[in-house]
Image (tube, rainbow, N blue to C red; front, top):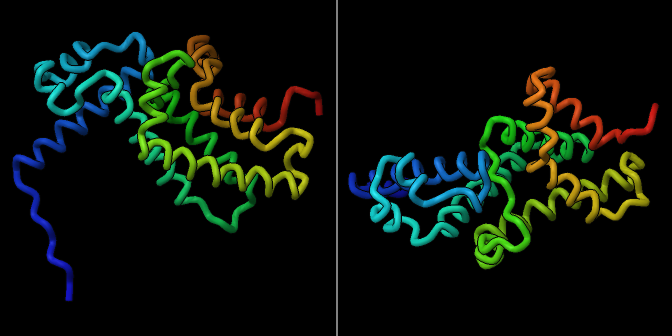
Length: 204
């Protein structure tokens, strides 16, 4: 017997569509200017709704940003789930880093909050975000350790340091600097940063 599909009311569909539009806008603004420079007025104006209506969905600027960060974390989990468990751990690490940089160059990767940002505390208290972060960290950490055991990644560097280095590629300013220079297209920029990240700077 097939489960009965739950019909969503038109009002609820509109509510979800508006929230999706808000989160997409916040994502872009966070990528362009970061949390501190983004304003609620700017979000409302870009979406085309009153600020009072915006607050019905998200009661604060921190809640707005947290929703966008949670969405990106879910996208990361979904992307990782598409990777084959039979592929080489280092290949999967490369795939994830390339994916994050593609999002960054496309303006879809929110900038991480600074140490003293109020957003950081909100994210630390957000169960969805923290659960996603732990899951992603566990998977990447497992691949890093496996790659080290295979001699593909430097065993002298702690896995946690490598993990944070890979996370940092999601907000790497080098990507924007190279793009502003106008000498390389996005694919070339990603290949250049991938080379410095995974191969290092020593002459081969």
